[in-house]
Amino acid sequence: MNLNDRTKPRKPRILPPSSSSSSSSETLTPIPKMARKSILKSTVVTVLCVFGLYGLSTTFFNPINPYHSRLDLSLPLDSSSKSLSLLSTDSGENLSKFSRNFGPVKVYMYDLPRKFTYGVIESYAVARGGLEKVPVDDVSSLKYPGHQHSGEWYLFSDLIREDRGRRYVVRVSDPEEADLFYVSFFSSLSLVVNPIRPANGEGAGTGYSDEEMQESLMEWLEQQEYWKRNNGRDHVFICQDPNALHLIVDRVKNGVLLVSDFGRLRSDTASLVKDVILPYAHRIKSYSGEIGVENRKSLLFFMGNRYRKEGGKIRDLLFQILEQEEDVIIKHGAQSRESRRMASQGMHSSKFCLHPAGDTPSACRLFDAIVSLCVPVIVSDQIELPFEDVIDYRKIAIFVDSTSAVKPGFLVKNLRKITRERILEYQREMQEVTRYFEYEDTNGTVSEIWRQVSMKLPLIKLMINRDKRLVKREMTEPDCSCLCSNQSEIRTFL
Image 1 (tube, rainbow, N blue to C red):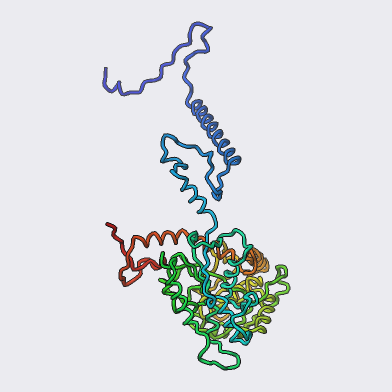
Image 2: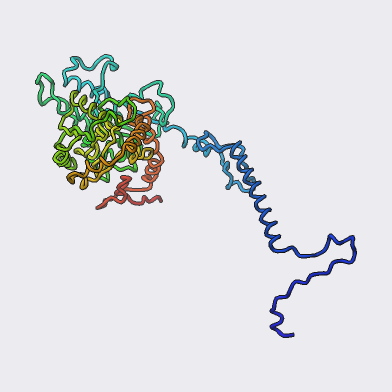
C-alpha cells in the first residue's frame, strides 16, 4: 500500500439498515454536525439559565450586605481546606475587626486647658468690650463670634453634644479606645484676637498673644502620652484660617489638618492625601426662593476687597475690565454688617457670582454664592474644593483660567451665551448640594467633615505601622512628601 494513501482521510462508513423491522429505531445513522451544535448550544444555554436563576434567587433572598456588623454564618465552611474559608479564624478576632472597619470611628477629644477653648472666646469678648469679668461662671453664656472660619466652633459643639447619636464618628471618654484624637484649640479665633487691643485703649502691648498660645499648646501636647505614642499621626487639628497655627504647623504636620486650602502650606506639610478641605461658613443668608432667572436682573456680581496679595492680584485686573460693563455689579467692600446686607441682595438678584482668588486660592464668597443659587464663576487656578468625592463642581460652577479671564470682553461675552435652561440646571444642582455648606444643618457640613476625617483612618494606621520599622535620617528632599513620611530609612531588628 502506498504510504500516501495512508495519510488520506477516510470517508465515514455508513452502515446499511438492519433487516429486522423491530430494530429499525436503532439505526446507526450519524448525527449531522449542525444538529450536534444545536443540541450542545441548547444544553449550555439551559445550564447557564439554571445557574443564573440560582444566583439571582440567592442574591435576592440572601443579599450580602458589606455594612453588616458580621459575616453571614450561612456561608459554607471548607472543612478540608481551612485556610481558604472566609470564616477561618482561631478566636473570632477577624470578625470583630471586620465589624469595626465598617463602624463609626472613635474620637477622643482632649480636655484642653480652658484658655485654648472658652478662654479664647473670653479674650475676644474682653478686647471688644463685651465682658467685664473673666472667667465667666457659666460657659453657656459665651457666644462664639460669627465669622467665616467658625468651623472650629461647630465641630467642638458637635462633639460635646449629649444627643449627637451615632454618626461617622463617636466620641469616647477613654483614650485607650480611641482611633483618633481631636485637638479642639480655637486656632482661627485666636489669630483674630491677636491684634485686638482693649476698646478703651488701655493695656496696649500687654494683650493677648496668639504666638504664645501656639507655643503653650505645643508644650502641653508634647507631655501627653498619646501624642508621643504615634508622633501625632492620629491627631486631628483644625486650622481653617490660612495663617492659623503658622508657628507650629511644621510640628503638627503628621496629623490630619482641617484647612480651607493649601495656599499658605508647603507640599511637605499638607496634601489631599492626609488632610481635609473645609468650606468657609457662608456669611450671607441662604436664598429661600425657587429657582429661576426672572428676578435675577444682574448678569454678574462681586463685592469684596479689590486689592489682595499674591494670587489675589487678579482682582484689580478684573475690576478694571468689568466695572464699566453693562449688567455687571462689581464693588469694593470690606467685611461689615452693611456689606453683608448688600452682598446678600446682590447675590440673590444676579445670575452669576464672580469668585476670584484672594490672598489664598479660596474665599468665603464661593459658598455665599452657592447658598444664594448664584452660579459661581471661579477664577482661581490652584483652588482646592471641599468634598469633591461627592460633589462634581462642574455641575454647579463655571471655571475660567486667569489668563482668559483678564482678556477684555471675554467673561461677559461668554456668560451672555449661557442659556436660561442651562442656568436653571446649575441652580437645580446647587439646590441638591446646598446642605453640604450649612454648618447648622444636622446632616450638613459638620457631618460631612467627620465623614472625610473617618476616611483617613486606614492611611493613618498604615503610616503608624510604617513608622515602627523606620528611623529618621537626613535627606535633601522629601521622599514621600504627600504623606509627610520623609527623612526615614529601614529600621533594623536583630
